[in-house]
Picture 1: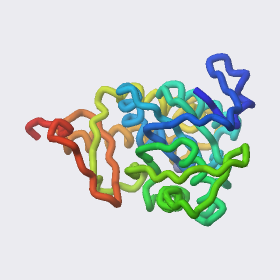
Picture 2 (picture 1 turned 135 degrees about the horizontal axis):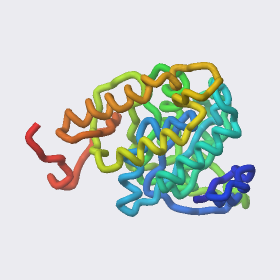
Picture 3 (picture 1 turned 120 degrees about the horizontal axis):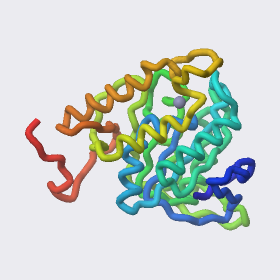
Picture 4 (picture 1 turned 180 degrees about the horizontal axis):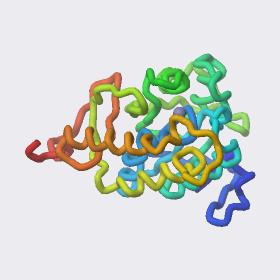
Length: 267
Ligand SMILES: [Zn+2]
């Protein structure tokens, strides 16, 4: 895994992090989250599934989650790296936008356009367009607008060496469901990935329930939060006749090549 801008983590034994701004790795799938842990909570089952199928998957965190009540920016980086290792992610970058206050404006869009052109993902999965935390909705629209702008030749961006980046528009943008429930446009069976998904979420040790922790209890650290995640995945699974599933929304219609892609059972 390449962790760009994470040189401070290079001491961690299990993780090799190199600063590699010249990396031109092409990704099949790029997952983007406003906060480190959004991606794990929203779509880690699907990411793990795609990685198991041999796809190259990366993650971009927009902020460092510095407004989080528990833990620190440092612990969050370490936890995000651990979660990425558990999932088998190829690259994870943090854009260091301001937690709680980043905007969907030209400056932030250009930051993201650069990433989309650098990694050229076929599919992007990002935050939903409206949620309990305003960063999620704002992040969702920032991702939505950036995916469009990235496909325009006249929007100019440059690599580290000064050469121009080529335009790139992902073919599909899906939005993962986080806190508020929305009727999904597509439901993906993640029953076989469930254990690994929960492991990736629990990598955020400071955020979730820990009876030994002396930090203040939060919405996330309440033991019922994890129970709620399981209930949500079971509910979505029930809809398609499998044990666990993740749901996604899309502004664009979703097409399939043939009926083999359908989950078939008697629901
Ligand atoms: Zn979040």
